[in-house]
Image (cartoon, rainbow, N blue to C red):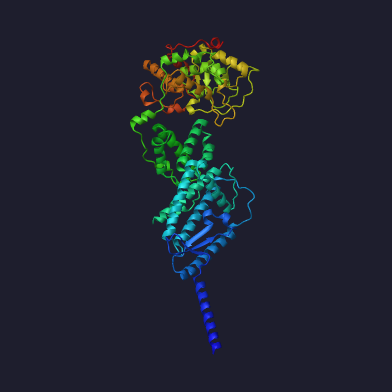
Length: 615
């Protein structure tokens, strides 16, 4: 009996132990489940670590995965957690199959299209991940939503820092690492020394900022269009630089071309290197507004209304013509321009004033006309002819500074016995019987030297006009004879006009133009608004004085100064030109000479003759 009781007791005890073990086993937490220690949530969470084989293809924050089961009931949490774990492990397995590839050994050179592809894939990845988390089976609980909001704010601040500070940002190393990781995920091995790598960093930062702004809007209950996150195909703004240079360089000189490119690049700095079709009229308007009112170096109203608006319009027009964008030209839709107040507008004007008689005489008596002055170094220190004849040609002909600084010795020609300047862009030969280069005798014409191309403002500059007799009186002909004998009949008239070799934007006569501007503005104290163009304004005033005595035949003054149309304020002095201006060769130099001689410069105290002056 006792033995039976002992056997029953043993069986009872063993059954109790088994049940307790089963109960303990049932209540045990799987390794992937946990509860928050801060007590902010009673729900169970799943926590997993990504396999080391795919960690290089994930952002560091994604190496550890955490997701709420949405329940405090352990039994339910185990079931839901197991489903979450299985789903996440399948996802990592798929990523392993797709993304883990043999190590990329060759570097991939960056291009604008590759940058767009890398950043576009990044945006797509963010959209896909957010859709799965937000609209999947579990959704986002309050805690996870707060964590996402914090992460978005942190990321947005970091990307703003990158975009504002570049390499100086404390987040620069982090984003470089993120870019490297993401590029490897896509199968690209990039070099940080690639010239376009900073562009990729900036574009990547913009993509990250854009993605987290999108996610933050969703967190606030808004429903931004998913299309705003889908990378679009198209051409970036920066791609238009090469297109525009190839098109415009055939039509204009380096100065207007570089000005247009500079304006375009400033617009890219303002808007970002987005797709052409993403730019709206409001973007253009805000750029104009920024440059007028807020930029550190503010532009004038005239510059914005003219050069800036025209440059942007031509860029977008070329893009539309070459089918690089589908939308309308956004500049054409800017129906109203931002405007400065009248007082501020006048303050920012870059005025050009005519020289007065007193200023001209001051110049002729200044150190500019002291041949042995040590004040002038470089090209103008040795090219006395440019210092001597440059201001004189500007005064007596009103010619734009770069026009006469591009003259070759072969551009000084005789037409029907009249000494002339021939303004052209080609380097001429000596086979024109009507216009013979001066002193081009046998054995004196040397081979043309290699020079950058010449350019003019417009076709009206291309003309042949008689040389003012005062220049001949002051020794221009004797100087040309010396220049031809020493250097040849087909060399620059002034040696200092030749651009310095190797420059990015070679420009004829830069040495003279810049030195003269600084000299009259600063050294002589004439101030802002005076420079080489002041001769042209003075020349026009002398034409008006001559016209007050007797009206000239139609078109004479335009040919002399290289202008096209008569301004309204001058119409009382000139007979209007009709369609006849398009026919024939125009006025011959012999017919122009008497009118040139009518311009009165007797109130000027001219320097002595050149050869005597230069001794």
